[in-house]
Length: 438
Image (tube, rainbow, N blue to C red; front, side, top):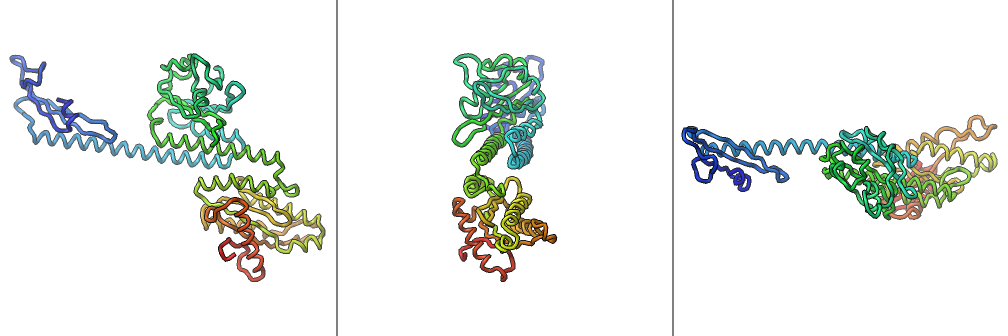
């Protein structure tokens, strides 16, 4: 009868003397009774069953059955609402965690910073036993960092091999590295395919272990992030799975950005006088920067900054003083920009700034910050105790409102610069955004 109620979703009433009720027919002297079964389906397919037994002198008819049916439907709806609220709270929590990690990754300066940010942030999540970050070595993984309550146990165990043995046990990081895909194992202490020393020491408390590759778009695996947790349930949540996938992709991008910066230094992509990026360095760095901005759905300001009347400085005080002024300007630009922004020198007294902004209000704040930074006199000549005041002009373009490669954007910024310099002496602002009138 319960099965019928679950299958049909309709109330089922049965008295114990009916032939379909075998094994429970009353013996002589035993009071007769009946049974009522009602069910309701929850979101996701789970079903609730409510059963009631009643003596024959209080027979529950169809009216009672309808009441019980409404009760079980309301209970199912209540549980669905409760689960929905729980999921929304968890989703909001993961969103906050994700935003914090992504913000920290954007500011990370070294690969070690990237691994530390991931491990420290994720290891404090409820129920997480460990977060292990491993990078490929020659034959085995090398551990960059491990966090969590079980972390100390790992150091007594051998590091996993990069390649799976032809037969025998295969550690989780090796599986992730070999497949290039995320992998999870439920109740790993019972899985004979995992190394025994891991199962008997580390994974006895784990309800799940999971791993994610941190890899370049071309497929090269830069690192493997392995995690263990007591409760497997959160790892079935698509929101968490999407977050982990996003974090691994952003971590790969951050590592790629750092390696690119190292290559840029090795390739001498900097201006020898100021230490800023030169034209070639800007071209390489801007490609990565613009791709990041587009993924983050923000804006990139690409501006060319020019000093008004720089030539008289060279003519009056000499080229050494002019060089000192350019170095001082580069220093002020660095202090004004965030570390994640770009600054370069095209040559002469032309500089480039590439900065991430959120909207036009942020744009105006940014331009005001540059103006304030350059409003102070430049103390570059000992004989000129009051210092030199230098006026600026800037032409700028916003990406992706204007699309194109770095050279295209710089050309448009240069057209806007030409327009604002043409208006020198007859202008209200020192900058101009490119538009079709330029």
